[in-house]
Image (cartoon, rainbow, N blue to C red; front, side, top):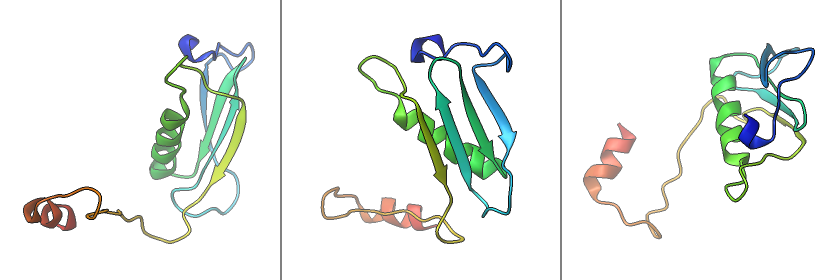
Length: 103
């Protein structure tokens, strides 16, 4: 976490803190609070929410200097299911691969 510019928080003791999300949120909901100089707080209601939060955090890392900026993210799924988008016009795939993704 030091390479991301996140250091141990004096009171929290850990660079990343995981907590339960408050309120009645949808499954897969999460919140991320990034305090670059001290800690990252991730709140979620279930395992899926923690997974999506960590995926979002990984996508926020600047590859040039391996830093994350201060920010707050609150996200929840719009629908009860997650799906996949396959752009077959730009990315040509064979029929076997497409059918394996659908199964």
